[in-house]
Image (tube, rainbow, N blue to C red; front, top):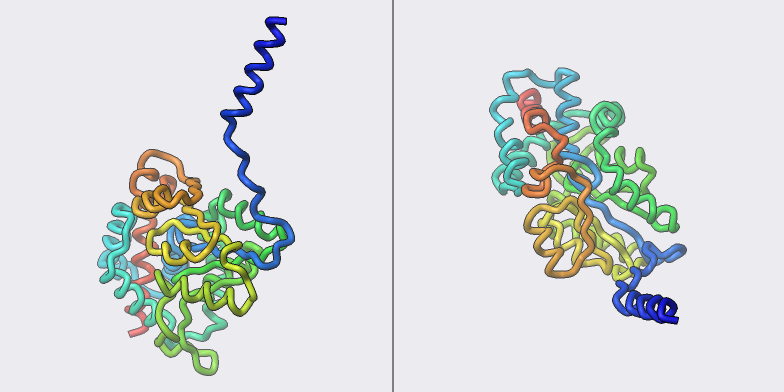
Length: 285
């Protein structure tokens, strides 16, 4: 009798203190829900534009001496874990010079090759699994990134996602003009793009999910009912905890947790990628 009484008391105690199970998410068959994923450091280690630049450098689009001037910018960004407005402006202006005069089809074809060379092995398996869960539930999944939309579309297609929202460079008769259509898809602009897409698709944002590593994407994350901080920088981690948002960190190592950079990625290699993307402008001038 004493043993039975003790066992029953233990069972009741465990039931009272147990943490309630999280509801199943994503909800299967919910056609009013979708998922929106940031790309750089959320789905992929590093920045897509930098990896693209590395591929262009390999194809001798520009010379080695152009790399040194810009390497420090990406090294600083990776170590500090934040974005500098002047660096972003420089990157934007250089990106326009990169594509000016090139055919859209040419960059799309090269993008397919560069994905295999530099990007495929940098996809975070954990984030990829989250995206697949939404697809398996019958929901649409979009990348939302400041990277050129052509690069984003290649990555989305390779991952089997629905599509991508990205920065749009103007083209006339299939040739890039060197100007943007609108502004770069960054920060609040991402939130506006997601809101517009949700309206067009008839989605209920309170039932949608968004995923990002950066505090710059707080406007987008705040739009949806299911925000996730993925490999978050310090500001986003703090905000996510304050708001009780879900958090996932797929990086390894103390340094990654501290400053928000993939521990497996060497700063030197990434810096070279950054410089490659920016320095390409020298060839077009």
